Length: 363
Image: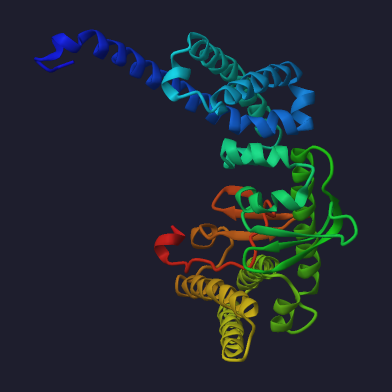
């Protein structure tokens, strides 16, 4: 069209410009329709939950599906070319109509996903595509296991009853640690319902394990106690007992035992040396990680008590002690720092390392 010699070919070129413009428009609309249709086909055609919740939109999509497949049949005819199909006025009109209809389905689907996210807020952590996959396969727990790490911090696998495959008995973390559930969790019904049930059972299990571990802490050897419990329970239990023991030492200081805090500091040193001795033995990878994690927190706890000794702290109300992160057991685990109190949520963390606590990270 920009050539100076266009005059002789003007009619032919103008016709081709129109045809190619039409081809571009049709292919663009076709790609949009095909993308939207392929994303929603398995959802609207295969999900029983969607059929129940969005009956009108399912009917609309079935009509779209039939129209789209008839268009595909038109394209599959050997005599047809891109130019000849695009030149048909009804093709572009049909694609435009399908785009409009699919947009309505997408809007209804987005509203449906928002409803599901409100029912189980952890769905906000996953993309819409992943959420659709979870919802469409919600009745097949083994299929959606690959999405669990996106919903739960450390849950990578579930162990099911061998004969049912819909009742979870244990949870496996990303690092391979196994948490045996206190009660089996039925993975049936709406996916958001049984995922919420799983979360509740995991939290209940951790709470029960922590309560039991706290009661047996003083019964025997500390190193044996660490290996008897999962990493999170062992670590949280040592932090709760550390708070209790420092508080008891401070109370003894107020009662006139001036060296109570120093004596406890020596006990901490001995405990730390025992753990370091364990690390020099032949431990499994999981056990070594657990002991290293507790060592990390024990070093910080030792440093805190050493600082309390050097500052001559004599009361629990002293800021040097109040400014520390303190775990306490009061029918459940609570975390204190200064005048703030937080509930320990029993979120399963697996056997993961902890950052070294420095004065900067402590602040």
